[in-house]
Image (tube, rainbow, N blue to C red; front, side, top):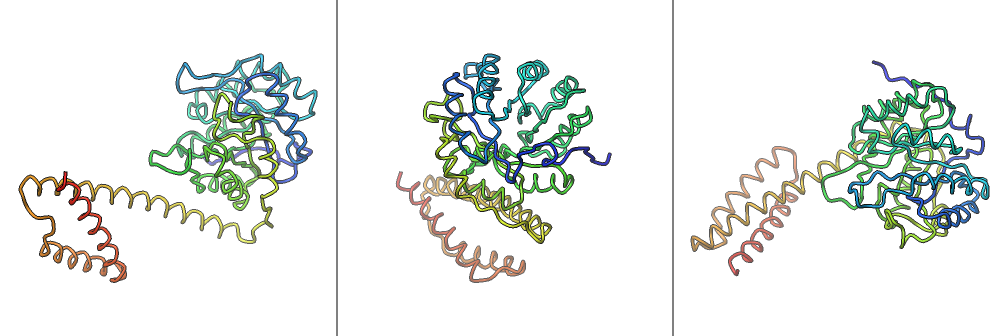
Length: 361
């Protein structure tokens, strides 16, 4: 089946749109005062006109804060009346959609945990038939482009033409500086398949902490993404959810002021290919780290065996044979001989250090 979406360009339905689109607000609604104070401060920023907030929170554990529920929708009506901002809320089932429509929410978004379940997406789609409301669809938790496309298609097929895809990163098992790995090649491929589809980036969920927000936000704009969704709280230190990744309205203002809006690239294909290759390098680097960790674990086992057998650590004949063999194989693969010697000397030094530790226990 050929991928196809029938959507309206962002500028056709979002009258105030000027790139980049910036959506902001707290991770969760906690109180009317928190919501209104945050919204009032954000509304002073002329380039932020959409206020986002979580009313229902899909949490991993049942004893975590799961949102205030429908009372938060009443608070949002006050926010809208007093600030004039558009409002956006996450929905996870048909009842959420109905409640948001009843309370005049302007934009719906579907979260990563909901997107993984086509049954949930279909349920939401059914209740959206005949409704004219913008819908934002986040990527699924895992890097499954087909699943992301499928969710967009289900929403589009019931008549929703005001669609935005939201890239919030992907769960990554390996340790990383990010909460969710960016894996930029996935949203880039989505833009290649659907050039007309607006794609914005959620740096808050990619980073997991505010120190990396500017870096990821700038990267998103450099890759010609259409906007940013950034979590902002009047007092992040006491936030009930995701405190580390939220920033104050003042910090949001500062971040926006530091963003560099570059001219559109003359060669998008070149930029996309470059990012694809860099992503592959990242994957190989993680594989290399795993391989080194496995090698050094074997070194530890050898050290323990030597200690128990009362054998010396350094065995020069074995080491000379290893070097000769590895150099030969590496040079055959086109690797520089000096680079290989330096690399294996470092590995050998670390191996000796680990075995010394074991011997001295």
